Amino acid sequence: MSSLTNIFLPLVVSILLVWFTFLNINYFYNIHKLKKDESGMKLCNTPLGIVINYLVLLVYVLGTVAGLAAMIYFASIGEVDPTGLDLLNVVAILALLSNQYFNHIVYYSDKSLIVGRAKFDYRKIKRIQFKPHKITFNYGQNHLSTRLFFVDEDKLKITLKRKS
Image 1 (cartoon, rainbow, N blue to C red):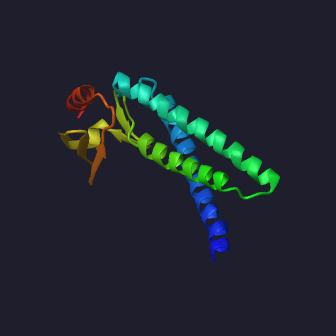
Image 2 (cartoon, helix red, strand yellow):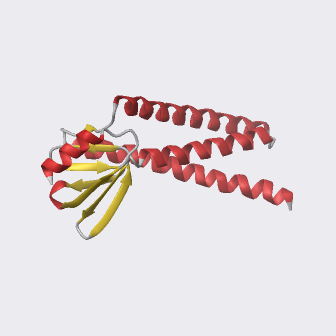
């Protein structure tokens, strides 16, 4: 039973690692594509938030590279080492946490707002409510809310009140 768990559990964690890594790469591709469509897109973070963004990205990239290198090393020597499995778990958790953090980054421009991967047109945003570290609004027929991590709420309030 334990040998089955030792084989099955790392496989599941590896699949989750690949999935969240794909989501993170897809996030940066989408942001690049959306920013290319609108040249005036700006990050709506505080100075501390910008530093945190870069730190999260740096820790994620370094952790993923180190984890993949260690996994390739352990696979090349043909041993299943508990340290390698622990490293796989840490890299998977890093991918999950960074994905959740990146989904709350806010960009704004003259025409639209980007929260995570979603782009919102100001003309369709109605009933905006700001709560501490949270924003809720109606977009079309949908009621949406998101947490605001390290977002300059004053800048966001001014932009949304003026545009919508």
